[in-house]
Image (cartoon, rainbow over all chains, first blue to last red; front, side):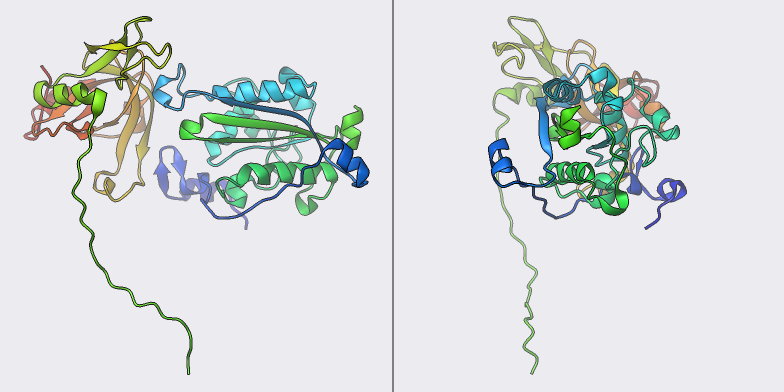
Length: 213
Length: 164
């Protein structure tokens, strides 16, 4: 289905400034990942495995009124820095170190916040980065090539697994029509949840090529 | 013969009478209802003023003491709601915001009413003031916020009044 910018702007308002098409469809669904230890992968001779090289999770105040700056999601920064560090990547250069990112975009604004808090662009420049085409399929760093939560539906509880699986498919070259170019062999997935989106998790993944770099 | 399952449904009503306690936060609702005052709690150790009130400081877990805060405050984040549950559907569009009252260190979530509700009126940094319902029940809906410049208009309406 082709949706234009006009369609979004003309859809009915839900909660200012979000229109109907800025919001995900709260849906039912399931997702699955098969995880295995390094030993098991070698024993079973798994072809084209994707390796988890970094994980990070963090919480901030559940009650938004307690937060220092209520427009920001600091748990995203803490989770991202932890995951990047474990994977040997740099928060300030992350955009040039990965091939794609599957982000939690239950609402259009959340994706913009993620660009900024995960270190892709400085705070306040996420919107400008979209206008420049940065997160598009052929952009600087393709974000949510699968369509994200707005495109795929938001099956709460399964979406983090879905995003991680999609990033893994990209790294395997198995993403079909929404395959992006894989050069560095690394991708990230990101999910948030809880009251006021207090909880955030980031996973860094690499394919065999990315592991060597 | 058609063997397709068909469910027979009867519309009925279940009525439940119940009451619940506001526990340690009761003073907030009593002062609101009887005296048109807004009370927060101040940590006995670090001095942070919590609103909504907490019996214990959420930072250092020490007991707190009651303290009255001002009825004017500043908007921290806000939105205008056009989609709601049946309980509030009559009120849409209405604004909600996290508001930091003068004298408090944390923000509370509450509704904002305006004669002319546009996004610029409820922007971050805008000043708002508490207006009370004349008939109060000791509930959060006993009060709401209005833009500071609309205060006089609102307290002169028949159902509402200003604070002390």
